[in-house]
Length: 494
Ligand code: NAD
Image (cartoon, rainbow, N blue to C red; front, side, top):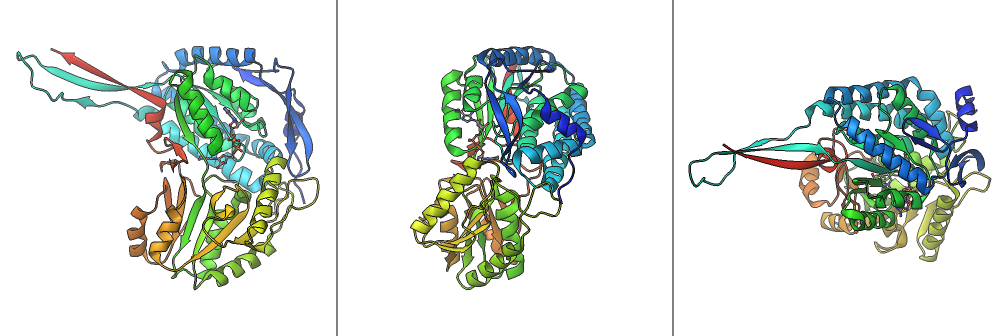
């Protein structure tokens, strides 16, 4: 049974949404709007005005002023505001989670536990960095000519106005990663949410004001890709931090370079691999595959999509997996007992339908699922496919959906070769009871993040980002600081 919506959520959906600029909600000047559709029902639940060029200019101007003020705030003040925002996320947990579930179709438990609770943890982690960012002192290396002395040091200075472009899969958490990285380093930030999921960040921007963030430090500009492009091209934008698909990431990188060598970090997709060594226990492997491939219907950038299992075990593992998937309760994401919900939009559902057709055309074996589910919502069956070769479409193209494609292997060398046989390298996982073997394989696997006996768990203390075509730059840990600051070297003669 579905939970009841909070009156605050019903009231929020009814509001005339647009942009959030200079500390205030504003109705868009363009006259165009985005329909926000509940993917569980296919119904329009809210409308958000799309930004005009004047709105974009106003947001960037506000961010420049916001930067002038915020970059001068004491580090402890910056950290304090993020800590207060984390408290406010928790205080408004159910409201934010319900809005997130309605706009994205993610299960309410995932919205509560990941989108809101994890976002608060990330905010607190980032807040701690505010008081720990600094340069270094350096002893210059060359001998002096006349006995003069030199000393040198570096400063880490905030880069300026950051545009954070966010995808639809984790629209709350990824927006928080971007705004926290920017604000803690002293930058101001404009968040451009996905056109499919613009609502939660508009509410979070209000909470940020309540937390004490000065006007202009955080602005929100809504719209589709054209609005994102115009923000990057704006002459007063200093950096773009983009999370999304590989083709859009390439376009964003090119736009940023052409704009003014605008700095760009790109967190993109991939075709992540999971390799199971022959010693794995079948039940543990199946639980791992469900974690790696089916959480949030596979709509996680780090999710595994290529599964390599030793030939001796592939039948047992895929058979048990299909049995488990057949038992999943597919239902409304607002039903707390549902285990599997819709994908986030009709376009994505249609793309998955095309991939299923390709798998059939290439004579792959569909072991489970492989159909869209009829009805007004965007439901897709959890799917297990046995590929014929590493070149099959389902082994090479990102599905970003609840689809696990399997291929058997015979030797460890072949496993490494197959796992690395991709232009992408966001994440990967190895599954084995033999830690020594895992340690020997770790350096051979090409991925920005490699998990052993786990997959998908992101921790704010552990840097995250892609190699090869999966991206440029890193989030989390201390690694993000380099991407949000410029390094200034100072030399002094005395
Ligand atoms: P997308 O690339 O279609 O869109 C992402 C964002 O870019 C949206 O806000 C969109 O409006 C905007 N955009 C589109 N065209 C643009 C342009 N020319 N200039 C500027 N902005 C533009 O991605 P999506 O479908 O929303 O998200 C799914 C993709 O995101 C998947 O490929 C997934 O792997 C990837 N992803 C990566 C990570 C990561 O951290 N590496 C995390 C989540 C999702």
